[in-house]
Length: 285
Length: 185
Image 1: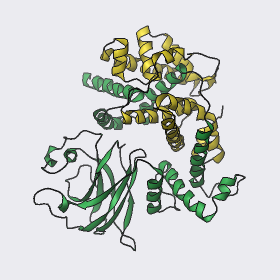
Image 2 (image 1 turned 30 degrees about the vertical axis):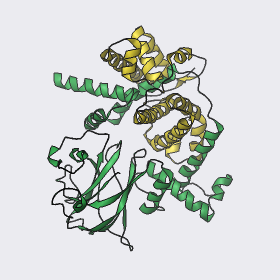
Image 3 (image 1 turned 120 degrees about the horizontal axis):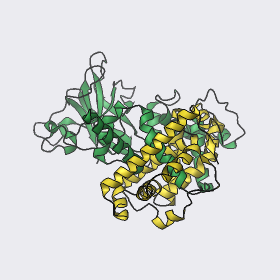
Image 4 (image 1 turned 60 degrees about the vertical axis):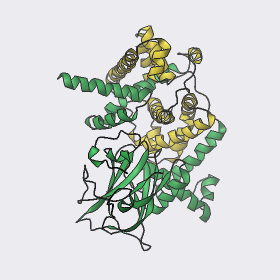
């Protein structure tokens, strides 16, 4: 019983800290481990209390400056353009939306709209392919990193050899910490039969502690690989006509600083804890 | 006050997306200016907050909180994330500025804010001061301890217990009102 009370006290400490100054890396890891035991409503309650206090304490609000409003209008137009296009009539009295119906403007709109849609929906709208979504992310997010794939055979460790499924991997990962979103572009890796095996992405976050899994330490390897990584999703590789597969990343937790992205071979459906049969990986430079 | 605005945003109502900016643009801007390093940073933050808000609109439940409080929660969450990422502790307002900010005014506030003020009034001077520094100024707890001379553990306890009291009061009011949250003047 006393152990449960201590856990609740610690949970409340973490919630209070999260609602006022944010959490450190270790605290965020602790929070992520405890959060599944609580309802989303319970998690929000302390932040709502902080928000209520904030409103009570602050003075009158300042008006939104015109320049900021204009910028928000653009973002809102993109958001609206991608949300339920069949339900919202195309014709509007707004000249900006009408102008977007032009071919060139429509193409740009789709890219930005695709990003706004992706933020709000679990699946992409039919109009945007993963490749287009990837382009939208790269073009609109300033914090996007791009890291090329390397085979495990290229790692600076003794006896390193490429995985048999790596047929000369090329491509890259693009990732935005701010949006907790990214895409893999892969070619040169064996296409899989999902009934036999699947690929699974693991994200190593520099904002989280390393060392939980010391068995994965090795001279020449980044210490971050001893971290318990975040599941980035199970996927299949079915290249297009050009031999390229573009796959959205499905991070199961919030990533603070995505740094290493490793793809393993796993049983169908993926695993919670991997044996680290790494096929290829990408390391943020 | 726009009733059901966020629910309409969640439904894809274009007019509601724009009305959301009209209704909450000032609130989000005010929070961003207070918690960001400069105006340019605040502009970026405001856009991020609104995208988060439109994305989160489907989560809003009027039986749990008012729209204003929900919007402020989303904004604070995003702004605190940005603050933490930058690991900067110089963006909080100087205490002198906070003293000048009125705690009550003729402006309309949500019922939650009214209840929060009532709770604040029941707390001791030290606890009130700590909560103001944490909530309004966004100061790290270590800075609050240094500023007030209180032990860090006491600061953390004041914050936790203060937020819990507000949470409990809001929960009581919600149950008393049957889940409806209305603004008060």
